Image 1 (cartoon, rainbow, N blue to C red):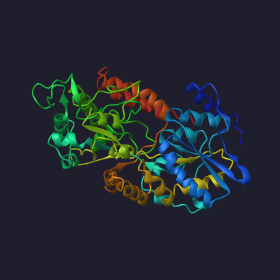
Image 2: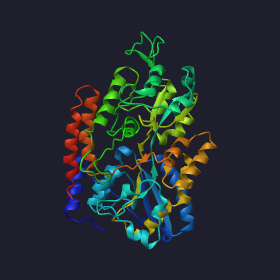
Image 3: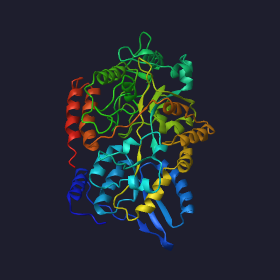
Image 4: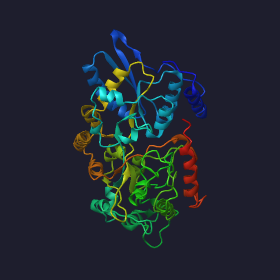
Length: 460
């Protein structure tokens, strides 16, 4: 198909202009390879998943000798801009890894192919996925993506540092907190914090202005994550807070919920006490430090990070790293957002049947079990999760914390919502201003009101 001069084309052009893209990329679409093979292009921003799914592609091509799969990985900073340019130029990839943040934008512009008919035609079992199915249903009720993976949060800690401070893995496994005094969580973090004179955070004379080792990494908004996926959000979720007034396609973000204000104020105070690193404190060239940097350098005793970091941190040279579960709320609740990415098909693909054959194979137990053996992501099919955990256990990497999250139903669905790019641009500065003490808690009511405006502005 050629790009039509319709409102979709105009909206895409406007989106590109907003991103400051000067030129449209070309040569990205599907084609036909030599010897009569059909080329199916698939994109991802994750270099590790690109390598992992190449193993699936090799197997798939042997079973389907008339199809060649071309996997391309782009840096996340450029990925979605390249997709938009491909939509406009009619050269987008046949299928691509997608973030739920962009579901509304792409589906409303007619750039995603509904998968319902294809699933019925091939008897594809969508029920095999334990996480993320509803994340990829649009407001029209149609399924626009297959869950690819899921991610969550955990506490990674330096085992040696923990032991020297008198704590054990069991202590980490049983941490609880509340927004009033921090509970056992704050007691541990304070004791793990050490100033340059060797005084701990819970001892007289502690110098919060000259901290040598922080009890925990930054727990406030860093980078572009205005929803605190691995930092404050699991704590707010343990209090029963949910980001939207509805589980799917909310009309408002509930930033004005007192439970959220208490959570964010608590973590701002924890930073002020010197127990948690301030945002950007260890940044280099504008980039936030990785968990490996922080734990490996000894700058933090505990790092609040993502499940995708487990394989790297468990193999960190010179440091024995343990993995602890989410911290329980006052009533014992543990909860975190599962953040499932999706596999979507471009509506302009010239090869819908071949593309679906590849995408549906990627959504099979066989493929996900193979790809997830890398341990860099958790697949959306339970049997494949177990396969991944077993493979990583043989390498000395423990994923049991994440298996428990799934089995104990501690994973919350990642709420799909409209206008994700605009919401991030509008809300992130306000969140940062709060943590920098430039605004007080009144900013959350402003953020809630602004979210209501932007969620209603879908411009379909």
